[in-house]
Amino acid sequence: MGLDGVIKVLSEKIKDVRRDEPMAAHTSFKVGGGADIMVLPRSEDEIVHVLKTARQTQTPLFVMGRGTNLLVTSKGIRGIVMKLGDNFSGVEFHGLYASAKSGTPLAVLVREAAARCLGGAEFLGGIPGTVGGAVCMNAGAYGAEISDFVEEVQIATLSGALTLNNVEMNFGYRRSIISSLPLVVTGATLKLTPCGSEESKKKLSELNEKRRAKQPLEYPSAGSTFKRPEGGFAGAMIEQAGLKGLRIGGAQVSEKHAGFIINAGGATPEDIIALIEEVRNRVHAHCGVMLEPEVKIVGER
Ligand SMILES: Cc1cc2nc3c(=O)[nH]c(=O)nc-3n(C[C@H](O)[C@H](O)[C@H](O)COP(=O)(O)OP(=O)(O)OC[C@H]3O[C@@H](n4cnc5c(N)ncnc54)[C@H](O)[C@@H]3O)c2cc1C
Image (cartoon, rainbow, N blue to C red; front, side, top):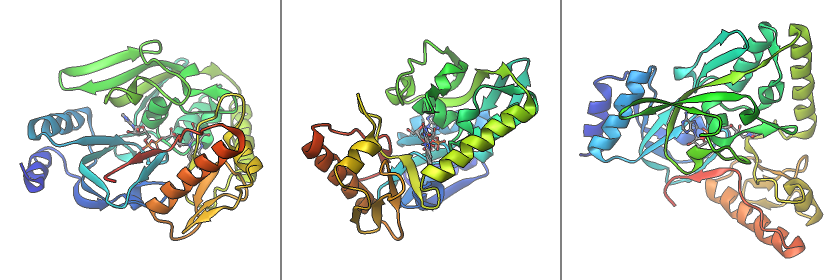
């Protein structure tokens, strides 16, 4: 079935279906070509309709949150991109538990929790992604990871909803079972700890201030470009190799934090990919460590 046919089937149940949607508008790097089809479902029923349509029409499906860990190539993404962001967001609290839909921004989750005197996960507040993206990536900062708080994760499948517990999620450093299995996360339940509301808000703003001081938040990026290698930090290794400020086209190793590759203005995805490779090769030549990208490169090459 052609793309128009796929759009027709998706539109039978879902209002927001877009053709040739520029991915630059949906990623924090602010680069990338178009998605053949972007669909923004608002309910679990609609999510299952997307899964069914992709299966029946044999169309590739990519799921994303806020696109804060993605680098999309210039040629863009073939098939369907299902975005689970503000269109599928909301959080409920029961005692110490917060149950959030996958599109909920982490900042909203943490802020709403603080208002209910629930804390512990303030470190998530400055990470610009969604609950779904954070669960997939096992996002973390300052020595803690979302997996430290996850009780269970809700998954949508063609044969119904599924719940995975923390062990079944197979969390590791910046990975989970979803790194190897194409599952769609619809929500997660986190167990938080009682705290003073003001105390939690203060912690949040201190952590955000720390980020603003150390990270190049004034430029588009996808956060830390590389995973933390064993026995060191990517940023320090890049700096020691003399690569701070290194530039290819509009892509640059940040002067403020060498662990971030930024879009310093007019970067193409290929500039960024070329700089990632250059940094990996030069760090390897300098200290023998081959850095692994944390950023996910998606789309046609
Ligand atoms: C300025 C800045 C600072 C950052 N700081 C940190 C940090 O301190 N720590 C950290 O860990 N990360 C950090 N990041 C990276 C990023 O914010 C996290 O990885 C975040 O968890 C990604 O969430 P997202 O919703 O944007 O996911 P996306 O980037 O949209 O997707 C990331 C991955 O998750 C998958 N995915 C997303 N949602 C779903 C879903 N519902 N179901 C199935 N798969 C899904 C995608 O397919 C993709 O593989 C930072 C990024 C930026 C731009």
